[in-house]
Length: 88
Image 1 (spheres, rainbow, N blue to C red):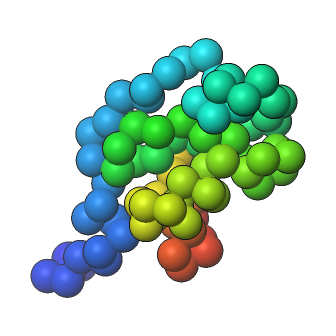
Image 2 (cartoon, rainbow, N blue to C red):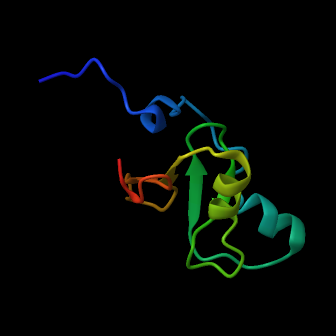
């Protein structure tokens, strides 16, 4: 079954390349630590997860409204929508 109505958060997903493969962009700049990395699927921003002290991926969502991130952890392919607080 197909739908003619696309979820606006899913529509925000673009083919992106990570801006860095070295770590969380802000943690690298600030010299702080991160736990896991998340890739913004709207713009390619790389931020740290909510288990990280600085929670830069979530802060990026709050400042940009870019709704969906994907895990950058090895072997993980899941995507998370901050707006609906569920997996996409």
